[in-house]
Each structure stands twice: as C-alpha cells, then as structure tokens.
Image 1: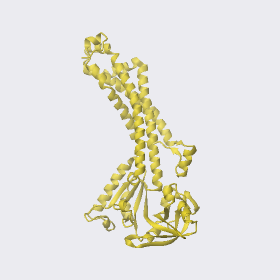
Image 2 (image 1 turned 90 degrees about the horizontal axis):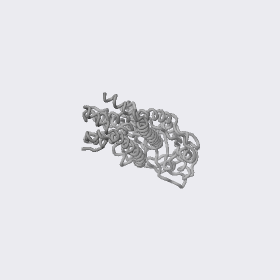
Image 3 (image 1 turned 90 degrees about the vertical axis):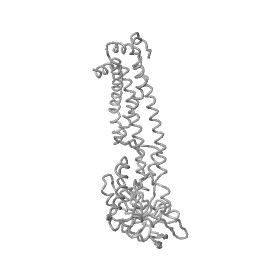
Image 4 (image 1 turned 30 degrees about the vertical axis):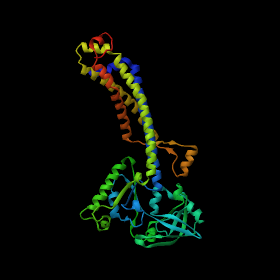
Length: 430
C-alpha cells in the first residue's frame, strides 16, 4: 500500500518530480563524464611515461632502490620469472640490465646510463624503432649500440662511429668496451635523450660481467585498475616461492641470513613519485569540482524534499487522523524520496553510459599546439575515457548518499508534527 501511495504521490506534482530527477541525472552524467575523462587521462599518461622509463611494475633486488648498484641483481631465468608470467593481468615482461658508465669519443666524455634490453621486446612495448632518426634499430645478437640524439650531438658522433664505455662491473670487475653506433634515436624525454645508451642484453651482460642476471624485470599489466591486486599477488608469490622449504638452487641467493626474501616489488608510483604526486594533486582538484557540483544539486534536492514535506502538512494530518501511524508516514516519505533518486539515477545512467562508452572507443582528438607537444613526446594526442564499473558505482552511491543527507530534517519535522495544527494547515511541531 505504501509503495503504491508513494508512487502516486510523486505524479501529483509531475513537474516537480521530473525536474528534481533531471537535476540528479544531470549531476550524475556530468560527474561520470568528468571522472571518466580524468581517470582515462591519468591511465594514458601513466602508460605512455612507463613505456619510456620505469614500466608499470618492476621486480628488483631489495637493495637496488637505494644503491642503484650493479652488485644488486636478480636471476634472468625462466625459473625466477615463472610466477609473474602465470598471472592473467600480466601482458608482457621485459628483462633489463641498468648501470652507469663513462662514455668517451675523441676528446669528449660524459656519464651515461647503459640499458641492456631484449630489442624486440622493448620495441614491441615502446615502439623505439619508430624514433630512430639515423641508422638502424639494434638486434639481440648485435655487437653495436643505439644512442640518444642529444648524446650523439654532445660527443659529435654519427652512425658507424665508435664509442668507448668504461665503468665498474659485477663484483668489482672492470667494465670496458669499444662499440660501434648502429643507430641514433630521438627519445621523447630530454633526460633520456642526453644520457641513454641502448645495447642488446647479452652484450651488456658481457660488458658488466654479470652472467645470467638483470637489474630489473619490467612488468606491463593489462588493466591499471587491477594494479593493487596484481601487486599483492606478486609480493605474495615472490615471498612464498623463495621462502619455500626447498626453493630452487638458483634462488638461494635471494634469501638474506634470516631467510627473508630479497625481491622487491615496486609499482609506478614508487618508481616515479613525482608523477604520482602531480596526478594526486590534479585528482584532488577534479574531485573537489565534482563534489561542488553535487553540493549545488544537493541543496536543490533538500529544498524540494522539504517543500514536499511542508506543503503537505494537512494531508499528513488527515492520514494520521484516519489511523496511519507516524512510522508508516515516515516510511512513505522515504519511499517517495527513494523513487525520485532511483528515477534520477536511471535517467542519468541511460544518458551517461552510452556517452562514456562512445568516447571510450572514440576518444576526443586534440589539435593545435597541445597535439603537437604530445606528438613530440611520442604520445597519441587524445583524451581517452576510462570505462570502469567502479566509476559508475561510486557516482551512484554519491547520489544515494545525497538523498540520505537530505532526509533527516524533513523526517524530524514529520515525526514531531502536531496533529491538531496539521489538520488546520499549520506547521507547528512538538
């Protein structure tokens, strides 16, 4: 009876009901669009930056974060990385050997970062070969290197010239070698363009005398929204595997004297804290604007519900006089408010879902200077939309929370309503 009565009451004032539901729907659509674009842009920026530097996740020796030393390495074996390969969310895994050396040519020298990689895997991940401006991209069995354009200009080198690398190898050995330049690449990040030298992983392992070891395993995931879950699984796997009563012999060196795992699992926020901080600040601004929008809609909703309450005192008085108890009267008002919320949410989802889905598969294309700047960085000039269930759930919960915040005062007025005064059309409460 209460449900039927509540539904009929809504349509006694059709204009008010529809306008209130549309206000909620508009807030829901705008917030969905804004948050989807914001989170989509963050995910796109993270993916683009990760391709040229840290990756989404890295497995490192626990000491490597602080030392950045060639001494703190992990096995480059299938046995070691098998636990990560078995995860559904892992899309690709790349071994890297990273260290520092002195690069010299003629009378010039400069400190550089040497990155040993599997060329085919790196190219598949970050399309480095597309950024080669001179010469050719390296292959896994090459004895030559690929250097940044900025570094080539500083050392006055071109394709076919030779470069001397000198540094410290594994366990104090001397790392020295003469390498021919096969290609020059223009990296989108200046700090890489001026410092980085790519060489095939086997060649770098020979240079630094590391044997079958790497400084990091770079892991790329399929879905950033599942990153926390993937991190938890990796930490558990590389703890339980190594702490097993009979771990493989090749992993014995990854236990400290207390039997604790020496594998460190780091995500992009830990690897690139500056970018994580910038995103957090920008996200806070976006969330503030979203709650400001909901605040404006909330005041309108509160005024509507209060008006629905105050102008119906005589009606409420008649209901109470004919035997309707106060608790059921409160339930009636709650049902009416709930119907308005559900109507607003339904309209908002009917409009918002197709909008977000369309822009997810057809991102907004940027033009002008912004597009040119992104293209120079090697990024696609788009504003992608994130299509994720939790974004929709969050906004729906906020709308329902708004309704809950608007109800207590009108319900209190009804609960304290004086029957005689209500029958006379007054608004006195006890």
